[in-house]
Length: 119
Image (cartoon, rainbow, N blue to C red; front, side, top):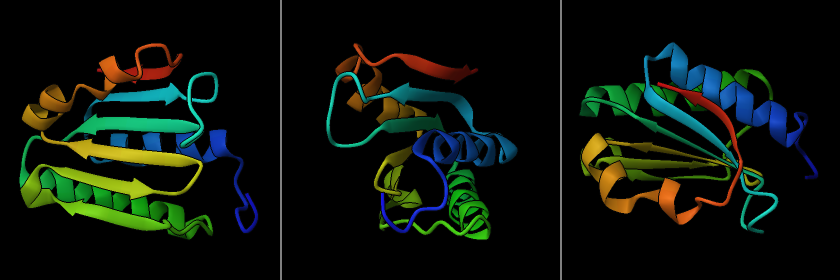
């Protein structure tokens, strides 16, 4: 995509690393390219508290900003239990465990290849 310095796979791995640095749990990187047009990759992860959800989202935005990448938008709030950070080719979903189970994006996108899974 024009304006991006990182390739989508590099961007996705940078998001995974930023989430892992803030101790996100059940980090999952899905390759959506074979199954959808909305993005190349989804990163899904959990935070155990509102504070941790905020820390993960902030770390993703800040660490990617240092690499010259800015999100197109950030939606949701830590208080709601779901924060979405949209970088266009890569979308990060930061959930409370309850909302992740409720929305079950892994099942919805079950045909997408798993690139990374960190428990």
